[in-house]
Length: 174
Image 1 (cartoon, rainbow, N blue to C red):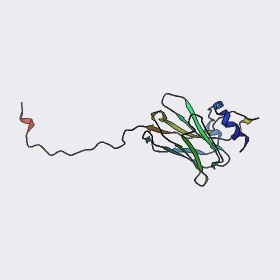
Image 2: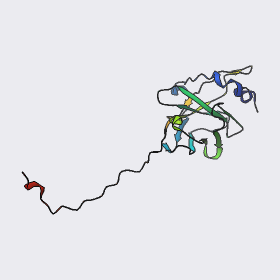
Image 3: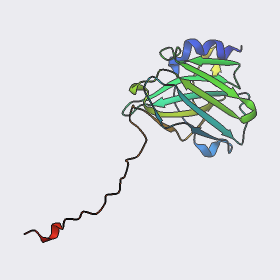
Image 4: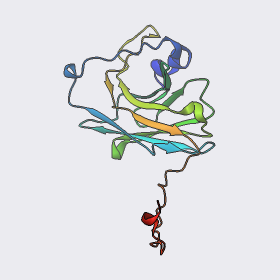
């Protein structure tokens, strides 16, 4: 486990959520995908696909933003899984994993509640901003975000039943 991985467990609260302009970077793109709607107490599963690049050698993060609130860092995974670190308030419910062959990494969040409703972002960090064990975090590449709503509402649309014509004529009444 490298120095950054060891120290991030204690320094997660120093995160500075700054995004570099996309034109400064290569053509690497991140795309989140997931269910959109999850029922309370179920498990949320999201994946992030990395295009035009490799998952090796980078820290892959999940961040969320609940409606009307600020950004909240969830956790990160190094490469395809050699080191994973979670926000202390979520660590009992979160699992991160990586699939190098698919250039993907994923998030599982168990026992979701309405408080987990948010836009979920994946983001890349290269680990280069650490000096003498002090890390100042920023994420240079972000996905577009995936809205996840936790609700018991059904996604099934309304039912339409055709009605037979009536034998009574209603237009003749005064």
